[in-house]
Image (cartoon, rainbow, N blue to C red):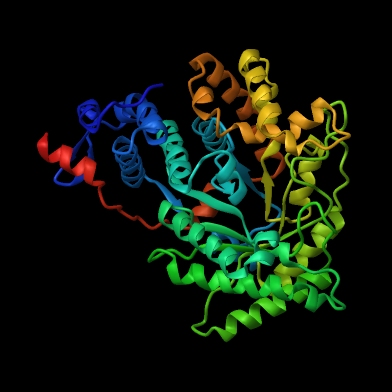
Length: 469
């Protein structure tokens, strides 16, 4: 894979598959564009200079609009689930930290083979930082993957854990909230039409009543939901999620769910304008992000409370019209566990670390690059090493932080290595899509979801070069 040295080279390379004509992108040979141009465009979108990068991102966005791979909100589909019009299907929400284009291509291949459109790509606020993938880059990589694989339909891209930091909030509440709002605006503009607001970090279990414990959580979740409604693109009803329990902490219960939802609905109603609320609720039932790593580097068995998950999903649907409960931190669970999410009627499950592990631990991943990454972690993240940590535990918990600094080296791996790892990921996605019961959902999703086309203004660098051409 390689990019472009200039915008003029980009324009020349597009022909005869596509061209910039009258201020718009015209695709003249769809097959040639998909097969011969997209790889180079996405590389330029990620690694190009300040002129090439926006030009490549614009072309990918406009091509996706033209060829039917449209960023969309899953809100209406989830509301249909809240009305009982579908059930026992759990949306896989897939966090991609590295090799984003190749990983997303694997997801789309699985989805197309399973006739599935009930799946989400997502990235958390923290991941955006340490993987060095701003929202527009992430969207470009995902849409390019859809184009390359010939996928048509809604593409659900989600901001996961757009989180209020408890530490930052304690120091300067307004500054912390403004930071989340700024990220929301950036994400909406990029094409994130699904956003999970996470103010659960502000739950205070020392308060005497459950309602008081959840007060800051539901107040700020309502505030940020209203902010999203004010700024969402015309014709798009963004799917917003709330959260009642911090992952890795105390297990959630129905009392907390009701306290949050009653408070949230009251605060949102007080803002006026019949604002639309959330479509789902994230809960804690026993998992932790990344799993619990043992001294030898293996993952400890985790017992998920599926009965509680089912109860929370039932209450959220029957009493509040939501799609159901959302489970985080589940990718490292044993394969047999995945059937139970659909059985519990969880509407969504978030998956990340297992895919990271598959990349790093694959026999295809170059040993010399892994050694270089581990040396970097030892030098630059030693402060994250606890006194009783083994090397295996330290590298397991910190290697996510190498995806940003080593992004280009990973993208520059040979085609054989990247394609081999992508194939391994695809096999994992096959299992997950099957166990979560999302096969055959294309027509069901399209019944409720009608993506909105949205042209973006052409970057000045591309406009100027196209006029010269």
